[in-house]
Every structure is written in structure tokens, then in C-alpha cells.
Length: 168
Ligand code: RP5
Image 1 (cartoon, protein in one colour):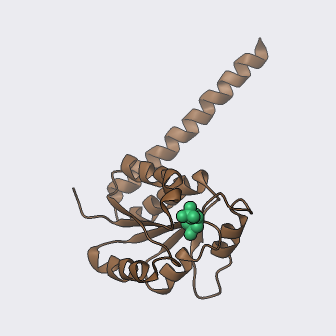
Image 2 (tube, protein in one colour):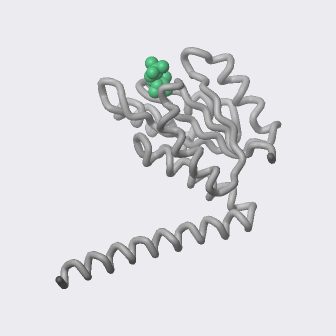
């Protein structure tokens, strides 16, 4: 198994079922990753250590998932030059809108690439990581292009099925 190039951090084990979507995408593209539960608030020292050591271990992209007052992606971005992708978790009294705002409203100078709330965002986080890695990996780029082609073909099949049903 190659060394991980993507580090997935999540604030709680309650985020795992959502973040399995990210892991599924990375596995599909044969991108080695590592996943940890590490919280900005509950375990700041662990989060800081994982983040500071990431680049030296060959990590190229960090994905940070958290819910509620979701500071994980921001504190990670503060401690690394690596690109950070943020995934707001569904849940809490505000159903993920709190996490979305916390992640997307980063101050100037501190970007994180914030995805949609929940499983769609988790899936897209994996795909965006693949796209970033593809910039320096032609094999991975070819796989991503094939993925997009397949998606377009699936839409076409669905449209043809719809047209056939409408003709009946
Ligand atoms: C956040 O608080 C976590 O990322 C999680 O989404 C949320 C709730 O955590 P638990 O109380 O389920 O551990 O920090």
C-alpha cells in the first residue's frame, strides 16, 4: 500500500457515516488516504500535530469534516500550506447551516474549499481531492476524465428512458 496523499479529519465519530462517502470515492480512484477523528475543540493538540506533520509525511490535500460550530477546517488551514477542503455535517439544531456558515465564511487570506452539507459534500470532497492530485498525475487525470464521461453517458441513458416512456 502506498503512503497516504489525502488526510481526512473529522470532528467526531458521529461524522463517520457521512465521510465514508469520501473514502469510497478515494478508494474508487485508488488514492491512498488516512482518516482520523480529531476535533478542533475537544482535541486541539492532536489536531495541530496531525496537521503540522501532514506535509512532511507526503500528504497533499487535507479534508476536514465537522458539524455545529465547525472550526476544524479553519484551524487546519491556519497550520498548513496544503489545500484544505471543508465538509459541513448535517445535524444539530440548525441542520448543518451553522457548520456551512462557519466553514464558508473564512476571512480573507485563509481559504478553505467548502463543499455542500452532508453526503453530497463528502462525495465532492473526494472528487475535488482527486482533481487537485490530477494536476500532477496524468493517470489519475485520465481516470477522472473517464468518470465524467461515464456520468454523462448515464444521464443520456436516463433521458432516453424518459423519452421512450413519454412516447408510450
Ligand atoms: C462536531 O460536533 C463534530 O464534527 C460533530 O459533527 C458534532 C457533534 O459531535 P458529537 O457530539 O456527535 O461527538 O464537533
